[in-house]
Image (tube, rainbow, N blue to C red):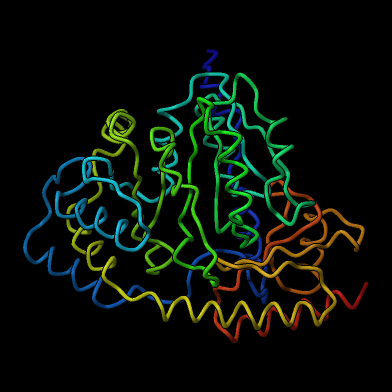
Length: 378
């Protein structure tokens, strides 16, 4: 019997980032600096809100897109903190930012449509694009200090271009797009029928006052989809909660995919989301700012080439001078140095490796010591 599966599923591999992370975890004695998950626990007030909701038996079906009070809280938060005006009717509470990305691309893509992905980039964008039968078009930025080159973007746009994904701060570089970059992208796309997915999940974790999101260009509101998450700034990765903002006609179609894939986010976690939006994230930001400073100084002292990140909690280290591809280098460093970083090839950019500094100070010191010892062997 010849059982044929969906070709889109057959063409997509499981995450190389997770696969290499498991390889590190399975290596006895290895120090892992791989995953982007805060080492802090979810704040008590957030957990207490969920406990209270359970005690109140808030365990029944909620409205599909989220309780009205939840959507109103997100709407108010986005206007107050980020200056974005989206009504509760233009918001969907999702199962993490991953679902937001999935329903956004599922809504806008037809087979063969192209999605421009500036690289290095989180591999999820390519995978979801392929699962939606779209075509990823990669736009390298490593030779332009991880900023988008306007001329390169113009060349990447074709009659088949349907969307572009902008991630700022970026994973894996920690780079934020400058105002000049955003203005240039806006000038190129403003009169084009192209959707802009703003993956802003790290925007709370920025270490500069010069941050801007492309979502501020509200003259393109009908083509912008904003994606955010509770995971990073509130240490809620395991809660799997995010949300998306979109102009009403787009949001109305996105809710179709949301309804028929997950129905809704769980009822009792929604009061916890409201509590999160009222949390002070300044201590978390300052913690990662200090770690950013310490790790950056240490890497530069080792003689490694790395651009100082302005957001998120990653360093994207240039290892091209060692004359090895990133996977071989990271596998050798894991085997001989017992320290694990993610190969840059898994972000679509060869010759780099990603270090996550959202580990404890002790783990970071030990990991950096091992990296320094290993590179001295070259």
